Length: 140
Ligand SMILES: [Zn+2]
Figure (tube, protein in one colour):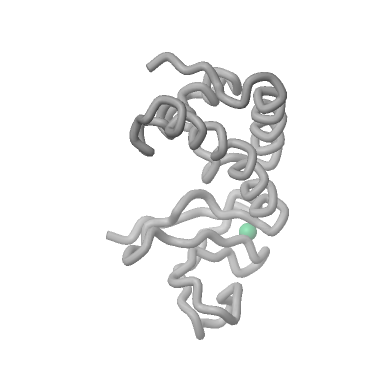
């Protein structure tokens, strides 16, 4: 099943492109991508599928997503070490905590779907926790 994606910047339907197609964003093979040819925003797919990993992102947003992950991931990774829980449980607890801090619905709390503004908030929130005690409090 092919899921249609829409560009969040210009509301154009994105095209599923593979390496070699005109408009494919990179010379390296990143697998199939949903690409908005007019503005160059794109998103990769889950391995072996054509399901997008998230919303289409331009260069600025991709950069902020990397920063948000760099700020957020160590927090739930610390929980694995501290509580000895599984990766998925720690990550779920981390996202639950993040959704409460951001005040957005848990279902929408995924860095893959966030805007630049939300990514900036994630970086700030995680940095403030990092100062204090390195690990977020979570109700599990
Ligand atoms: Zn676009």
